Amino acid sequence: MATPASETMPPEDESQRMVEGIKFGPLIMREGVSYKHFLTLFFISFFGIAMMNTVGIMQTYILNEVLQIPQDQQGSIIGSLLIFQEFVVILLVGLAGSVSDRLGRPPVFAAGFFMLAIGYCLYPLVSNDTPVEVIYQLIAFRLFIASGVACINVMLSSVANDYPVDKTRAKMIAGVFIFNGVGIATLPRFIGGLPGRFIEAGFDPIMAGRFAFWIVAGLCVMLGVVLLWGLKPGAPAQVSKREPILATLKVGLGEARKPRILLGYTAAFVSRADLAVVSQFLTAWLVIEGINQGMTTAEALLKATTFYVVIQAFALPWAVIFGILLDRVDRVLGLVLGMSVAFIGYASLGALENPLSNWMYLAAAFVGAGEMGANISATSLIGKEAPDRGRGAVLGMFSLLGAVGIMVVGLIGGWLFDNWKPVGPFLYMAGSNAVLVLAAIGVYVATRQRPSAQPATIT
Image 1: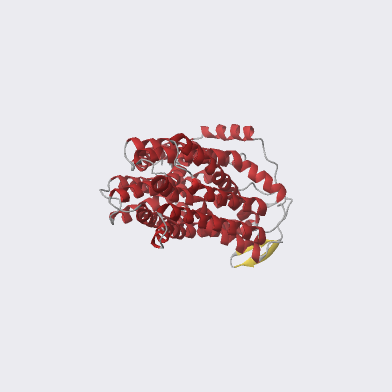
Image 2 (image 1 turned 90 degrees about the vertical axis):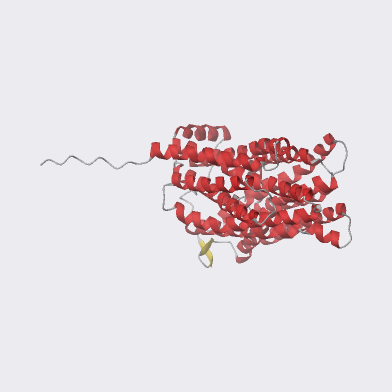
């Protein structure tokens, strides 16, 4: 589950006093933010992450039903597309933020959904030509989706930070996060069931897949229009001067000399990959299993999205549980706990004889809890350890290494999927989480604050 709204924005200039505006429960908005503006943000938050994740859920239908790609070649395609998408996102997030500072948030936010719509219109039209031509087509279509993901990721974070006053910003971000989670836990089941419904209505499987993608594209267009209508127009006030990226990288790398910050960077590499491996490889693995057990592609996709929803449904309450727990323990110990649960979840997937059996519900529950625990504990650790001076650089390096982790799991996971077995990407993540647990224990032992020695008593 992606959580872009949790990113930290630069602190405001103290000379710029926030004037309080409307209130909604515990939330207090800045002056000029209306009920329409922030309710639009919550509405979009429900759909945003789910719309971005649709390509990972639905592309396996295209690979199996439309292109009929051999099962032992699908992993490398999925991994390569994931690497390409993350590379494009890294290149565009800074540009999207800069443009929104000048033109305003609504046009950039809406452009993200319009880009998704174009990508989802084109994706099911890929033709079954030579393998090289198929890859080129998928990459070209994925470029639109990746561009949309970059814009939406940045804008979700930016708008969530723009609207509230400082003292309720954390509550506002938590609210956006909850709407993200509810959307991810409900919409994939509806989207994954669309091909089967069209087949039942008499359409052939290829057209059923196209109609499913086009419905998602229509939803994205609707969301873009809502954003143009409902968000606060204009550009936000500029509150800080941005440092050159090379200077930022230098500061962030320099802080890696501190063991706990280095551990936080490593946790970003692993925890972001935890999210990616579920969104990109789970559906592909379960659809292949379903086809091998005699299901149609549409039936297998519906079954796969059921387990995907279970994972996200269990992730949501664990966000609250880990959030409360992490404020009461050393953040490194919190990381040990979060990554341990993630290890149990991914390892349990490898222990399943039949991943479509009822035992998968239990494994999915652990995966959801571990996925959330790993990401919250990693973010909490770096937030605690990042210094006030150079904080933005450390958080930027944290995000960059998270993106690298996603690209690496795309490369290694895709190879394991094709050349070993489809559960391979998850066993790779189990091993990665286990190594991080051991590293975190070592850092805790080396850096924990020991009680001062008591002076000897003279008798």
